[in-house]
Length: 635
Image (tube, rainbow, N blue to C red):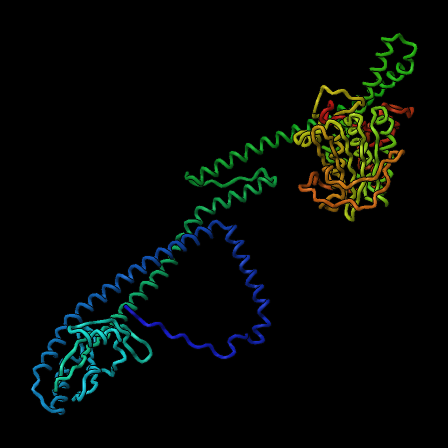
């Protein structure tokens, strides 16, 4: 059915500009709406039940909308076709009857003709087949000297007759029809107009239309639409409620299992699910509980074994200190008197002395590792300059570097690098990196660079030796890892030096990272925050050598001229050693918190094989440098 569109009301003046109060509250309202939208999006992402219910309701609404449109069209077509068949039959019959009466009229004057026409048209006026019927009689434009003017019933005018229908009726004989918009006081309703030409005395042509108002049919269709809409909305609510209840039955056990999994992951190994019934959810709960029990047993067993292992290593290390001290003293006596021995015994005394020193280093490293594993390692931190620490390491390693043909080139900033650190631990880290670089530098120069920015300081040790591939670089900090067991070494490392350096760096909240490339050498970077507890976001020095700025020329003393250009601050990607930061303990408290260090194996203060002086204190600098990089015996 054709219906006219409703008129759109005109905009009132001032609609384009909001009131002052509306403009004032527009921004807070927009912020509130944005917050609500974010909450809705968050709820949609996190709630499986909400997504299931919303999807079910949306799909049901689309299905109902499609079904409603289909039913509405079918019902409308059926009602229209039924009414059309009824009115078409009676309109054709009525128009033909009126046309026949007009053609047989015997009137000769105006008054009798008008009376005859009115009497005849009253026969077709009134109720048709369940619908209201009216008529319109209008002379054709070609007619002149007519007796009857425009005549209509029901207050109709010729304006309701479409131009196409009027033109067709004027030019062609027969009965024609067209859908029209039937005017009412405040709205329009669909209707039908049937028209034909008739002839009235004195032989003049007229157009006669029968107009049917389908308002009753439209009211019936509107009622059906309202019933379908209300029924669809109620059905949507029922569907949403059913979907919510059904998904709740399924999602609730899953949510409970997710919560239990989170608690289990947080360390609450005793967490279990309640199992009811024998369905799929019950089997899931049973399997989850069995898995949790197995995990708890295995984790408990592993924790027990780990504690036993740590205690065993600590106990053995402490128990070996006294006999090892005795053996070392005896080895020193033999070593001092080796010139009085024959060549075979002299060589045996030297081997015994060197291996006892290596054993002492390994014992010290094991004790230090046991402290880290037990969480007993503490920092004796203070704000110091990092540059003197680097200089001491270079002085210690210079003799060994000269023996291997390597030059130590130090690149220092113009200003000091103040940082909160434990100097003994930091010196141990740097010394280990430098000695490793010398050991694996193949006689090439070693570049030691110190850099700083507002938030961090860094030290890089770059050698140009055999290098490492990415896999070796990722494993170089593992305990006792061997890169190339066949490679000879000149210093007695324990294979734990880089692991201890990693733990020392972790205590400071810093990064210890490695880069290497076969045939190009390797680069190790130590990055420390200016203050303990600060989080690192980048390092003052790059890790990959090809990103470094040009450094100053090497001086004869082994130091380069201070560079004036500031070193770049580059992002370092994932944190290498995020670790927890332990409390910095002053020396006065340290004796009551930290376990006793291993006794020094040498009481006479002699210089060890690495060119460092041993003493009886718990000096962390006593640990031998590790040679365990790829290509060395251990890593």
